[in-house]
Image (cartoon, one colour):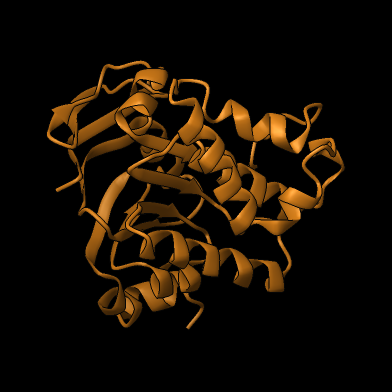
Length: 235
């Protein structure tokens, strides 16, 4: 198992955000976490990437315990996070944004090869490599955020609401990108309000409700689950 969260809990002050949840991510698979607003999805991803401390439980990645590590150390282990809202650096160029993703790497030749790989995957970024990031469209900024994460050469990519605020045609494009990245061997954890999209892309799914684990199982089975269909698919 590439990543295992065992009975983790996260608090914000006196508020319990997630309670005793366990999530496993097999190597080479797409795992999705769905749920309503305030369910604890983003908090769970932030715990995976070391951005929030645990109140309880353990996180193991690639056979090593990583809870308690600072986020840069988590990145060094091979976890990259594409945050909600993209969080690109608006006053830096596209290329400068991408190079920040490789800030921990010392293999300069490999970094240059990976930069060209990102430009091959996202031709629009190559066309705009000298352009200020803030002048790009929402879809282009999402591609930039994904490309920046890929520049860290991760083994696991965490994606928080990649379809948020994007036109349907761009959402379809992002979905294809996720499938292509995964097909090349990169594991993905996808948090997504668009449950239909998430369950179509994922191999395995977890449903969070108010910080608790409500359901889990193969994504195709949860897609047909009556509770999931009523609560998240609008059926």
